[in-house]
Amino acid sequence: MSLPDFYPPKYVDNLSDCHPCSIERAMRLIGGKWKGSILWHLREGPVRFNELTRMLRGVSKKVVDQRLKELEKTGMVKRTVICERPMKVSYELTDFGMSALGVLEQLRSWSEDMVQDI
Image (cartoon, rainbow, N blue to C red):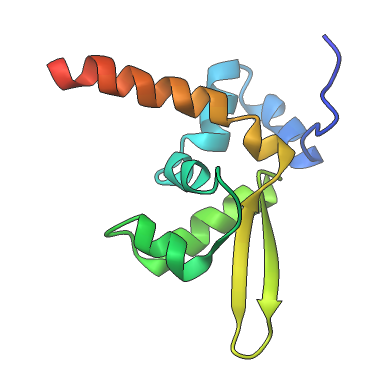
């Protein structure tokens, strides 16, 4: 299989050294607490930081900031400074981040179909 045009950064390649299982590597990328939700909320386009924090009801700004930095480091999210003063920042999915949306959609569907019965 050929590599996609948006092949992830070197950081992601290094995950295979410490996580030989494909599921573990994938979970390392999108499975951290709130990462999947953040990616899901960015699916329709750029979102400013405060707006994203409001969408993630109950999650502290510190945690949202940490997860966004992790997602940016892996090349899934792009950070754009809109204005220096006052500081305004938006976040959007990269092509690599968008490639995870299919998995998240399947997870959402599975959750709606199956988890309600538990």
